[in-house]
Image 1 (cartoon, one colour):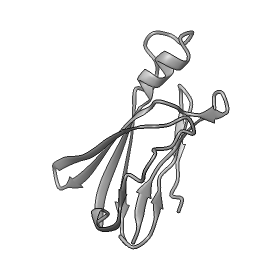
Image 2 (image 1 turned 45 degrees about the vertical axis):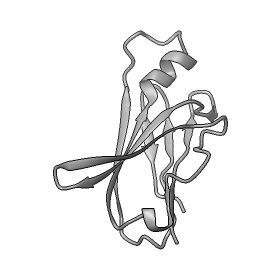
Image 3 (image 1 turned 180 degrees about the vertical axis):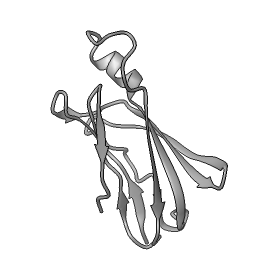
Image 4 (image 1 turned 120 degrees about the vertical axis):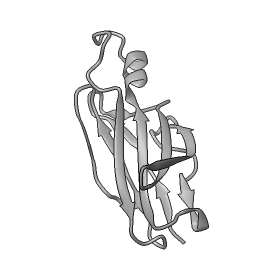
Length: 117
């Protein structure tokens, strides 16, 4: 059985992104269904997979990371209106038996992601 997980790395300080709110949605056409909301722990990860086993289905998903609030709290010297507020990653699960790890590498001004396992 597969699982879906994520983590956040703040490369502006070279440390995990702690306390970041993450929302996971299942996308079906123009509709989105909120599946879960989590906070990252001290290692920048969620304590449990976002989905696993029968919960993970083939289809389209969206992760939303509230990094604006994270950077406002963790780096108060940044300008009041930061550049990035919410990072949205929309992706496909093609095989629900595989593991999907969707990390976010972020700074206050940029981000990247990739599919891990």
